[in-house]
Length: 120
Image (cartoon, rainbow, N blue to C red; front, top):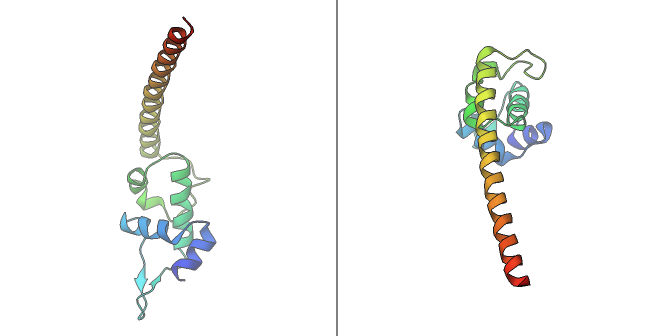
């Protein structure tokens, strides 16, 4: 199938598919006219990539699951390695959230100080 059909079937964009291919997560062959052609199995692979990305993993993280991307990842139990990767990603996200909360609190305090100074 061509890239547009794969994008339509998987609810993604041709640009995202090219990005997955560039990251080494998806492969295609070229038709004589230069168009990308994908096997039917690419549909499952793309759905799994999107499932992992929507769960909060990065493309780099998804690369660690390359051997599993052609199976039913949505219902399969996670592997110990998969759990480790997800826990690491969660720790990164929690650290980012904490850092952003600190920035928010500093900004809030600064705005209170400005408002108190303007009222006096």
